[in-house]
Image (cartoon, rainbow over all chains, first blue to last red; front, side, top):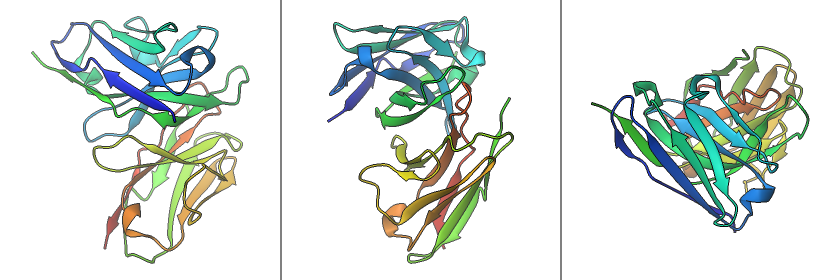
Length: 123
Length: 107
């Protein structure tokens, strides 16, 4: 059974930094496309970041240069380092496994999700 | 940028009803579309991928159809557990864009 468990959420000030973690069980993060998807309070879903099995990372435009997704394959964990956070970054952040077309320029859908980590941004 | 437009935004229905939700893409996405169900306080749950393929464990009353720019999610004989918000998501582009959601509520 696949299980994804996020941690590290909390209250941060605008301009601050936070690192989210996601521990995976049942799947090796090294051999899967893994992603972060967020949902602002009362809003819809937004894809944030993705890491390929080979280690390449991709980001939605609004977080490029501020967020970094990484993994520790020895711990089977994923991370999302969030820097220079703004009010628009307040959301529940879900860790998810992505399954895709595996063609250049294409995307993926998300078949397994964690329960989410809440990030609040306030001064 | 690609846009995904769902309609209606809210749908009132009764148990036993047949419910249809539409998702329109601003450009051709072939059949690269997924549907999710989300209940309050919970993570989304994958229902359909590649426009019409039912994810394992999902009840057969859920079905998806369409290709190109217009897609539908149909729930045959709505059950009490089906009152939730439904999202479409394209994966033809690296944007991986979601629709705004359709809330199915009890009439």
